[in-house]
Image (tube, rainbow, N blue to C red; front, side, top):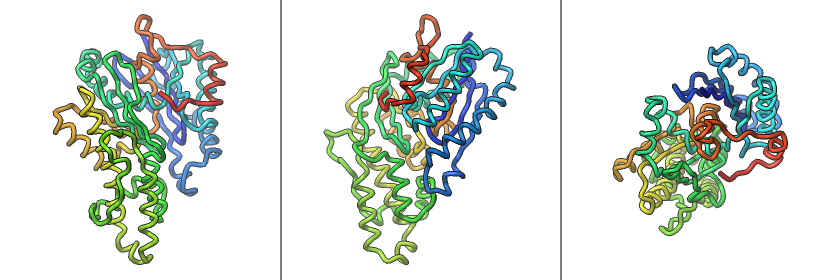
Length: 354
């Protein structure tokens, strides 16, 4: 029997989860620091680290009360990418628990967990049939969109991951947050832009769509941000306030157009059996609608990570530790144990590669 205790602390969410391959996620606990960092207009690493130190004991205390705690057979923890000091708290906590409980520690790449997160609901719906159901959806093309990363990834029939393209500069979520800051909105910017955009005209302003060539799958959003700044410099303050919904709608539309264009181009060249959407920006309603519409037009199933598994969460870490063949040895059902030296390496320089 396998029962995974998962820990996540890559940025500003402290999270713990329990994953049972026989039934799915049996417990999830998370503490968000959004209200704290909102006062500063963005994540402050020192404050985030302090909050992880404060909140891991409380979350683990809640997890210990769960009936599955006594059945834990392995510990999975985010080893990168992320903020080094924040990762260190999660890694140290995992190692301390591993020593105390005499269990192996598995390191999980945060982006690999995002890549597999759209399949969590599929597993939960029918755990016994998951291997069969997953096989019908591979090879899979996934779009990971967050504040720090924008990637197109492929999961092949053997569950191996390959990065097809990434961003040359800003991530999509970063572009939305920076755009919100230019518009004088608060933090986090992306959800605020989305909220205000609902009353605006998406065609009111002609913002650029970066790297539009059909032979290029890379993303680029820095030019979009610069274009917004130049547009705001042309408008009087009163006009900016009056046309804020149009500005937000047009800016958000440009970001989503770029994402969909690259996703569609990748679909045309891949022979994929399904499309996935994950990462924090996957909560954007318009993006979800556009990806779903693309799937219908191509007659491909679309798997979108559930809202609770789009941001930083331990549930996807535990799930990836089990489902991802990069970490799990099918013969034994066990994963790769991280030795103390490897833990130190992960903290010193977490890889941004998958």
